[in-house]
Amino acid sequence: MGTVFCNKKLPKLTYSQKLVQMDLGLLKFCVISVALSLIFHAIYVFSKRGIQDVPNNRSLHSEITKKSGGMVFVPLFLALLIFWTLPSESRILSILYGCLFFGILGFIDDIYHLSPNVRLFLEFCFSFVWTYFFSPSIVLFGFPISNLWISTFIVGFLLVFVVNLVNFMDGLDFYLIGTFQISVLFWIPIFSLEFLPGKEGFLVILLLLVSLSGFAFFNFPKAKLFMGDSGSLAMGFLFICLPLVYSSSNSSSFELTRLFFLFPVFWIDGILTIIIRAFQKQHILSAHRQHLYQLLTETKLGKPGTCLVVILSNAPALLFLAFPSFFFPSVKITYEETLVSSVFAYIFLYTVIRTILFQKRKNLA
Image (cartoon, rainbow, N blue to C red; front, side):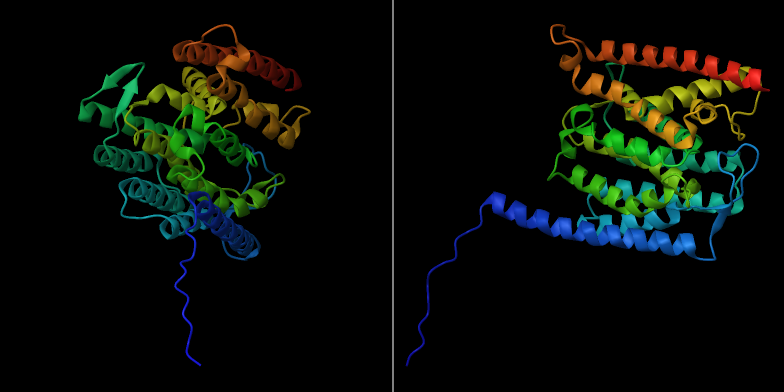
């Protein structure tokens, strides 16, 4: 009997079918990666080796706790990023180089406690070089900055400032992770459509959240693991890098003032606390307990309640910018009006709440 061959061609998959297959593959990979993240972080938390954070009178924790969790999730994120993307692509390279630099610098600082001047010098050197080669197209208060040297100086300075601002504010269990999670929910309407599902920006955020899942589990109050400088410096870089990189991939320039909507509470609490301490002639880089979230932990809210309140406090500004018609359906609100009103509202609330809490602290003293 002869062999019968079938010449009938298999039907081609539609785009939606291909997308479903790809999504299922990514979903399986994410589940495996979450499990790996949990395992790697658990090994570090329960191992006898590691970097310990010993509490002092300015700490919010009272027990010796493992820190430098960034040495676990940063390498995991970089490995997943290389696996799922094209490392030769300029946007991915800019993320890889920056995250690697700040992760290593933070890890060295966790171990050897670098001088603030040395760390700032290294951060500025890298940030200016990174910004120069990335050459972002930026706008500041509606005015385009076309000169490469000026834009390099502005973005480089902002990069260092945001990295250290995030580092300053990383002092409460789950605070930084929760702030990042609520912030990225609004990156599509605020920053770029590149963060839509199926786009590269969405994939990068997904891989970062997957890498952070194990840390988030052990950082949830009562935390068994802290991020340390190895994690907070890298996260600070990613906070500003991702919106800048993927917004600049469009034809329009990036409005730098939109960075306020990354984390409104971080900006207001961080900057105003620095200004107040400078007026009081205190060293702005030394440890203290004068941030608003630190004062709130002394109230009935405690640490878990404070964490929830300060994280959700970012939402009003994010919602106001992303969906202005929801708040004022009959009035057209410009971006400038949204920015100014949001900044002044947060400053007013910060001033009132801080004044009340400081008065209570004095009464108890």
